[in-house]
Length: 230
Image 1 (cartoon, helix red, strand yellow):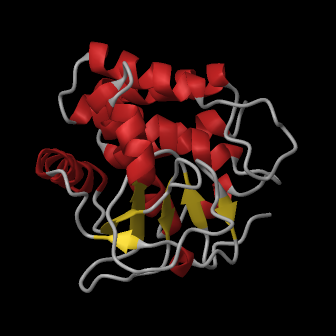
Image 2 (image 1 turned 180 degrees about the vertical axis):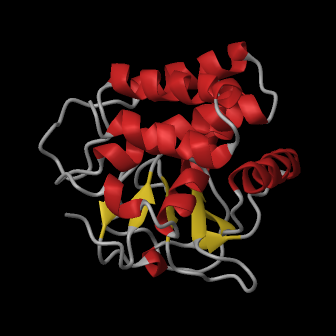
């Protein structure tokens, strides 16, 4: 069973820089680790692109509001491999938990056909991990030897976020294509995220749950029931 202590979930994003050490042994895309040291990344508060920063800040405010979280956010130097992750550590005052977005990942996503929808989905997925980390239900998502249930549950909540923030189905489909590309079949790997079809289904079910449930708590419970039953 995965441990909650110092748990991180890395997933797929872009970021901001601060320190001076390069990324070493960084988790690729989404991963869970019991003892990952966030100081191995150079971290930044700005990307160098004002347009990107303004757009991301607006999206993160929506994520915080919809999911009821308040993590600190920073960009990271992910030149070793595209990366983004959530972490239980708090490095910015008056926040709870941290989310790190890789600049390399964001730039590649923005230049892809998925564009802003992928960025919004990544922000929501990582925000969902922060919600999980500090919840009473995290143990229900850690019964397997892999991270699959936590990852699919985060995909489910990302879908819920798209509906709750009035994003179009077309935007959701763009994020879904990005998620599909990042699914895997490495079933026995600790970092297994779910197959492409499972990730896409979880996202769509989460989107539909917004109109089928009575608020976030009920949607969270429906998501848990789904991912632990497949």
